[in-house]
Image (cartoon, helix red, strand yellow):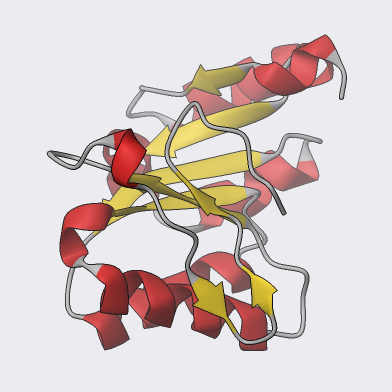
Amino acid sequence: MQAKDRIILALDVDSEAEALGFVGQLAPFVGAFKVGMQLFNSTGPSIVNKINELGGRVFVDLKFHDIPNTVAAAGRVMTRLNCHMFNVHAAGGRVMLENVASSERRSQSPGPNISYYPGSYSANQHRPVRAGKRNVNIRAPGRRSSS
């Protein structure tokens, strides 16, 4: 892992042009670019592909939290978009986390990393979630994966 891989730059802007300008200038120096609600809702899912085309990896920071099947479907969409990482809110519960992990594992691509936002949960309460035959790469922010 290079030092740049530890850097995630937040693209907290409304404009696709402004976001892509940052990506064009900084992709060689940044490990990933965070696309949050502000940019995702302003530009749509195509922003992920456009950042990838410019050589950037994308962390989609939407903190999915809904019924398990809906979050699993969102995970499949994130996998098809070829994002590097996305997150879910742990308050959705273990079944939701297992469903999104299992859904991602069934896809044909290697899939993104999935992190969870613990909310009111303590990071010390983190337990691995099993998805099929392997532990899925779900972790609290700031913790290293054991996968």
